[in-house]
Image 1: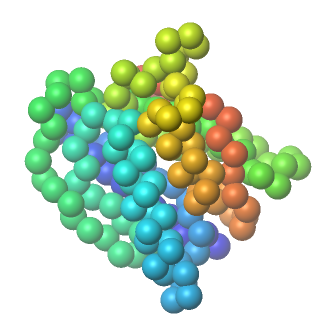
Image 2: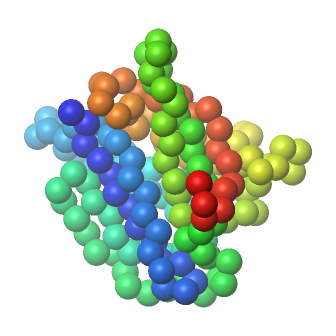
Length: 156
């Protein structure tokens, strides 16, 4: 059974947005590498959003990061990146998704809106690389492939 990385941000109005991502099971043998990968993933998430990080959790280890709210009025939990994932194992596994709150829309692709620019040397590319290197498909011990990252509103 995979573990989870839970990450939360405050938006401009002080409301909370949460992102829950399945990760490899945390063991004594892989603890340091899993924590390092989670921190890299958190950095990639922070780079593509406007909110203020205030909490993250790796399986049962939680850390209260900060209670402050962002200064950018566009840091709204309703503005989300919807990351669509499939298992690298293929087969009949359905697509799953992860919502990332307080999306920073400056990373929208100029040529294919409402999708994130994931081209070379962009924060979007860093996010895709972090997810594909570390995130597992729910219920399986396989990695994932990012199919798309799309801006969505409150009602999914």
